[in-house]
Image 1 (tube, one colour):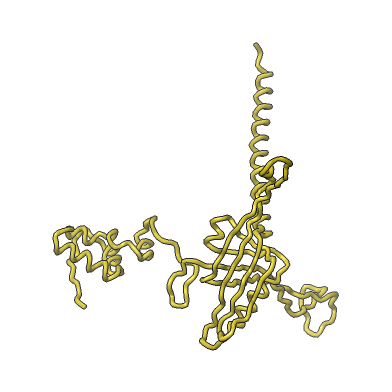
Image 2 (cartoon, helix red, strand yellow):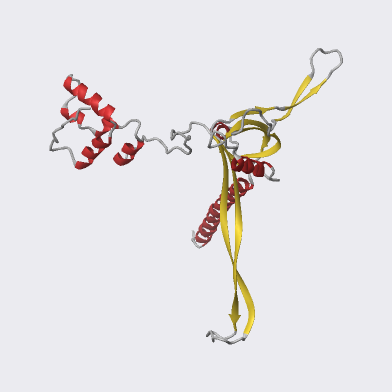
Length: 285
């Protein structure tokens, strides 16, 4: 592989040189070929903007707004995952510490027994469990609530729109072990724990996010056995969309804050009107 020697122009700073050094070699070769062909000038060759493409780190270094977001998940081969299905569960664990005596006196006297009570320290540790599947197939369906009434003498029923139906979600996926002959015991146990929860489960997926689906209430699930497969486990989940409690609380808080802001502005207008009326009453005509 040849090495390209580029003279540093006076107007090019160290920052631009570092950007070009970090650029993919294929991009540098392309720019050099264009320079030799006379398509670009030497100043354009040293332009850092010419090397911003697939490498988001270069865009971050230059401070440009047009840069890609960091991928959320990666495949086992290190590539960025374009799709994913995540079940998320948040829970807290209380860790109980040792009991310590509460002394009546402020000073601790060794060997004294003038204690009134014992106190136990507890620490709340938050945890987040995630079940991730990068190849799950998700199907979203909706059945509207329409009342069909049969009318005598008419070939067609009378249709009355009642309301829109719930989003029904069906997920089919396969959990694969890390080794050729290793059954994914931990992943299957994690999935089972989440599916057996008696509450709404937080969910994250590109296709679900497009429909505003951030929580699922599991209706039923299937974990079938498949022959001649010792390192994989198929699963199927049928669920209905329901907002998680944390989203409902956040929406209620936001709505309450909006109402409080409106009341505050209304009170300011009322106080202003009262002040204007008092000022007007003192004016003698």
